[in-house]
Length: 292
Image 1 (cartoon, rainbow, N blue to C red):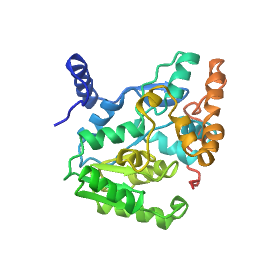
Image 2 (cartoon, rainbow, N blue to C red):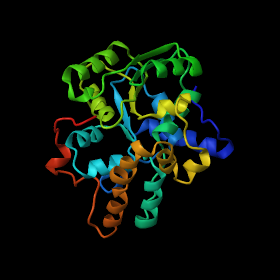
Image 3 (cartoon, rainbow, N blue to C red):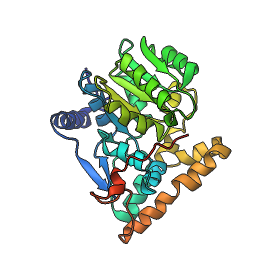
Image 4 (cartoon, rainbow, N blue to C red):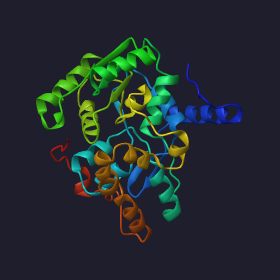
């Protein structure tokens, strides 16, 4: 049975009404500088994932944050191709959400990969449900089993940089094909997760929903501490992670993510987009995957 956890009264009714409508038609999108953002929040996204026919051909979910948007804007063709085929594109990152509202008047929903993952694990996924995870290793497998009692868990941990090795990529695809599941968590970072998800749609017989969720499973299991709620709501989660791991996160925050603010400012005078206009050859390029 689908539920809307943590809600009550009229709000719960509104969520269910919207879910019912979304289930019967295409999910509405917001064009954010060329990037089509699914106009739904965390609860609606979780309901759609949990309510999708498990035997239907694979669909996948991407959760672009500031870092992802910058990379898309810089023209990574393989990643752009992956985004163009995603079922749901969920807006992740309150800084982008708020800055876009202040500068452009754009109102983006918020549905982070971490929130979606935690909502599914705590309110929708049952112990006997089939769950496949790519990435994370034995430590994560043990934590998921112990905390959530998952008896149908199958986890495969590919080697570092696997996306550049066709044999390693094929091994991931084969593992997922051999372990059909309603819920497939791709926890191998970006752009590896997104590129792998696109490849999965090309494999006949693969079903379920694949979610590109970064390190979200580490937060849900408690293996990595997530920022307190008030920090998240203040849009300071990136700063919290920077203070936790200054060396590893400095480049991610100031070099790979911060330029999104300049892109939004430039868009104010009509001189910037995250994705090029439809028909631009670069938007559909399938360049060789680049990953780490």
